Image (cartoon, rainbow, N blue to C red; front, side):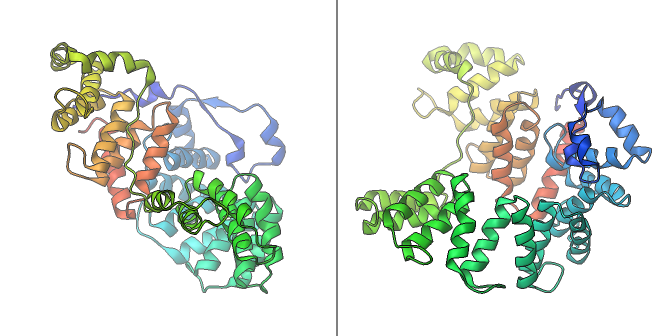
Length: 403
């Protein structure tokens, strides 16, 4: 049986943050925010409070305090959108466009995102620009996309500035202008925006809109690669292979090429505070942990699972590690849930199953470790919308104690 903390107790206090609500007056962002319980928030939403409906939708959309559930998010956004809350319209449109939480509906998604953008919020303008650029729910219109990116960029949206830079770099929807592209990339690159760093590096590599400078290009590719951008890793590999701006190295070129293909395994999440206990288990105290784990102690099960996963241990046993990790996960240990997700995601001791991987990662993300949210999102990027929706239904059933 899945054991869990009662959500009403786990979410005793929830701060209603006004910056989530584009329809609220700007001055409200500086006012003290009300604090309500989850039950009070749900009651307010059910009674027709549009702001409560929006915030409840946001909770399910983000899945940081309740299991992520796009279907429920859509339901609450739908109600809030009827009250003309532009944030609800935008978020509902994004879910409809992606087919998350239910069937995709691109034409309606476009109309919602377009309606929301009338408030001139930078992120809403950016989302509408993307739909025009991709022809999502509407005819492709690169000129309109460029205009909207320009508006959003002027309002301080870095992704919009970079997207506009790409249009100028390629001469799409605007006249080709490498110098203009560079001026759009530079502030975002300086702020650590990986895509801006990579694109600016390409300008320096080719000498378009700027004097050719391999050293500068290599430094930009290195920064973008460090940020995890696979395209930059590929470009960095080419720089090493040819000795452009960096010492020629076939070994480093091959290494970055491998990393660009994302063949690095997902790492287990560990807690350094448990290191000594795990070391003791690996040193031969596994028998005592097994006894405690079989008696129902979840922490012992978690420690034993880690000991059995270590390839350097006297007797690694991946299948047994999976059983003990699931025992700890079902008892509510968030790191055990996260590591069980890794085992399903990578097929370690268990059949590879992205749906179940995301189920456990979603439950793990209800804890306090931000790495669990990163794990959930990494798994999500490898899944179809249908798989994501299935995983959320299963996660809800675990959360509600039905499995």
